[in-house]
Figure 1 (cartoon, rainbow, N blue to C red):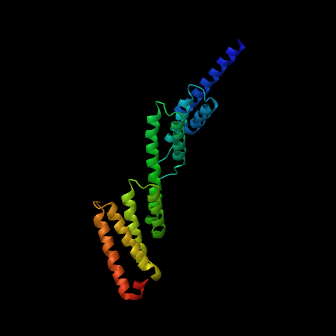
Figure 2 (cartoon, rainbow, N blue to C red):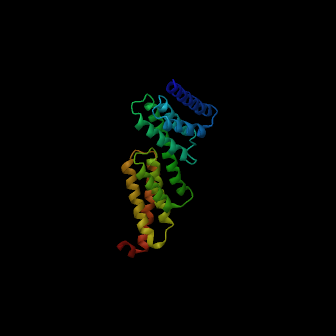
Figure 3 (spheres, rainbow, N blue to C red):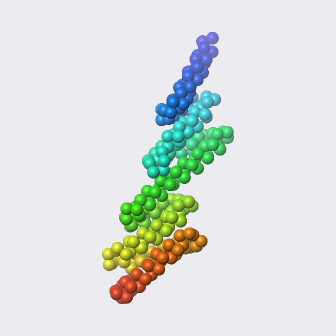
Length: 220
């Protein structure tokens, strides 16, 4: 019948379309493949292959995701799509794979965020480094880079205090000493503890010398 013929034609079109998406995937045209997998999943959402297509769209963006030092827009897109997939198909056999990739993407994005914050320290923009590193720690409180971020905050405060204008010196020495105590409270057994102790000793010594030379600052 005409109805059966139309239905068969629709199935054929869907098969051709998903084959086309896979062909682009196999040829390494990941962005094109992702687009067509995504379009298939939305256009044929009731199809048996809609679940697979939605996963593959996210997976293509994941494969297109660059190393941590580069722009992470593809990683963010892949992350968004995998989260949508898990929410749409929570019982799917592919959920475990999706969650594993989500963890990898989150680590990559976290690494990028840390490197961006650290860059301010590397270029000796110590005030900006303190702000950026503290923002990073607020965004990623359980980060694997937490220890390094906190020691960099301490080192930044020391550099900032040492090279500070007169009016800001005492405040920045005090902030540096606070950063030291924050570090040892969190990482008492750290391999960086000796480095932290050296910086702390310098902060205390230079602060005392500054106050001896400028006793009126002790009252502020």
